[in-house]
Image 1 (tube, rainbow, N blue to C red):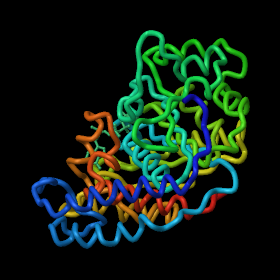
Image 2 (image 1 turned 180 degrees about the vertical axis):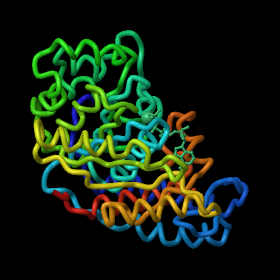
Image 3 (image 1 turned 120 degrees about the vertical axis):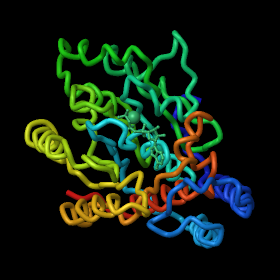
Image 4 (image 1 turned 45 degrees about the vertical axis):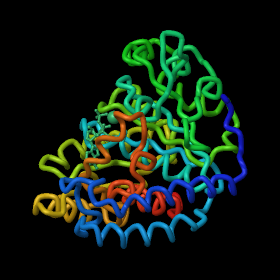
Length: 327
Ligand SMILES: Nc1ncnc2c1ncn2[C@@H]1O[C@H](COP(=O)(O)OP(=O)(O)OP(=O)(O)O)[C@@H](O)[C@H]1O
Ligand SMILES: [Mg+2]
């Protein structure tokens, strides 16, 4: 199925209930999450705390999340490597889709990690986002449905994309190739497009920023977390003033938070004091389950929905869904 077919939202809620029922049943099995997994929003990761969170979350599963008036296009960007861009893209997208939102993930990173995490089929003949940028292929034709998650599609990346930064240089309107691709089809049957950016500020990331309305920046709660952030914000301003006046940093998400360390708390406090309520209230804990999920071709939302990482991403996605666009 290569089109973003609208599906009956009621079906989707059935699916998420089914998923949660299995997952929360498993919660009682203490051995399922190792003690190395982090805390959720600073809370202890004990069996009791997990059961309480599961109860809270199963209530949340019934909640209907608001649909945006028009498709929200969000770039997940930070030129610093390994801060959780792909993990955030994949899990927020999965959480939104599990709550009835229609979501397309665009993998704009030649590493193709989001495509792997979402079990995209790729071989020599796969048409990917590279063909869309360089050969004007329609996104609708190359997007694949994500197995087991209704309402979620992914436009995969293949290794060809590694050459795209250079090939794009000679093309007309090279910064606006992705925007043009989005404009070429009707996004009215999508609620969100999430773009997973590579760890650089090159032409691929610029294409993402020109094509989107909002930038989401994951910040890892570690030493050097804020290094390079000034450069990223200056780039957003440059794109805003020359190429995309509507662009805004709408969301900052603190990732890999470890409530046991003072460093994590210090980074979180510093980011909040700089960026105020652009920062989501939810912190994503460091969690073994989150890092294991991609090797099974899954998001943590399906791999272990009751884990602290999955519940945190669920909560973060809910915050995003309830936030109006900030400009
Ligand atoms: N909350 C978390 N807990 C534990 N491990 C995590 C968490 N979030 C991400 N990771 C792990 O950290 C590594 C980097 O994460 P990810 O690939 O999402 O970062 P990235 O910013 O997309 O990296 P790149 O810059 O290379 O694209 C991965 O191995 C991932 O599984
Ligand atoms: Mg990545």
